[in-house]
Amino acid sequence: MTDVGVTTVALCWRVERRDGVAVGLTGHDRDLLVDGLVHRAAPGMTPSAIARSGVLEPGAEADTMDVAGALSSAAIGERDLLSGRWDGARVRVFAVDWSDPRDPLTLGEGVIGAVELGEDGFTAELRGASAAFDRPVVEETSPECRATLGDRRCRVAMAARRRFARVTACAGAVVTLDLAAAGDGDPYAGGLLRWFGGANSGLESAVAASEPGATGTTRVTLARAPMLAVVPGVLVELSEGCDRSLATCATRFGNAVNFRGEPYLPGIDLLTRYPGA
Image (cartoon, rainbow, N blue to C red; front, side, top):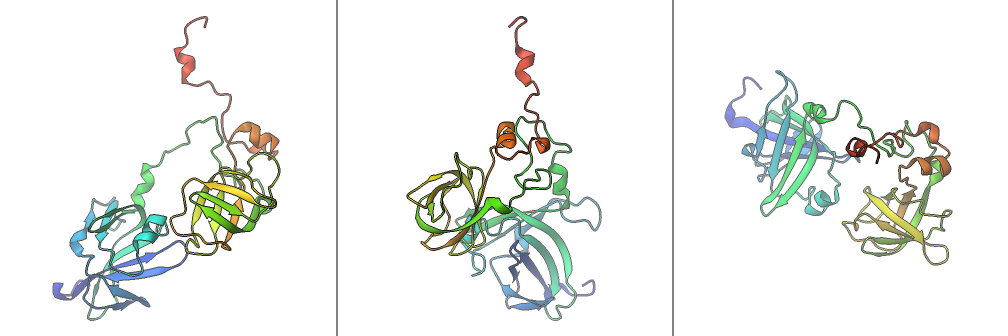
């Protein structure tokens, strides 16, 4: 690329979603085949739409990067962006000689963070390697457990706590499943509903609450209504949740030994009490 004239340089984007779907786009006026992937011409995405805020050192990934463009590609639609299908996707931005696109020059890489939609298109934030420095160095104390149910710190076996079911009805955020109630209480609150069919296939929805429905059914209230339409018969996977309290960890899961919180640590209010109060 060092000997290539400016007139033959084209800017390209390669976007790889978490579900394995890869999309290639280019600012050139015709499609380009780069590294085995056809990069479709997307004139709405121009070089001036990229802003790099700096790098840690020469050759390092971009600190942050904003890519803006029109929703002109059939592969990147408004509904998919809003539903979160592109969240966490890996993006590589590179320049290539369109007359001989065999030696691309990487300009930056990152993971899609916040996505904003406007009248003229979308703006996606790309988080580079230095975004890791924005995270806390150590965990903050909390009365609730900081582990995720079923992860390597929690160690609760989830195989028997996930169930497949089919949707019988959906009204807003309330989804009715052909699944018998699982025990007492609200075992699915704080859990996840994964869509395995329909327009929402591949997405996840947080569960706010659940309750027994008619005979042999369960009503699940999601944290927000599904972004795309839901039709009866869609296959889903429903996972139990946890309210992250020590009582639930001990009584329901028998897992107090792995509780990752400090329920008995005095709070800041201890410092504000009057003597003798």
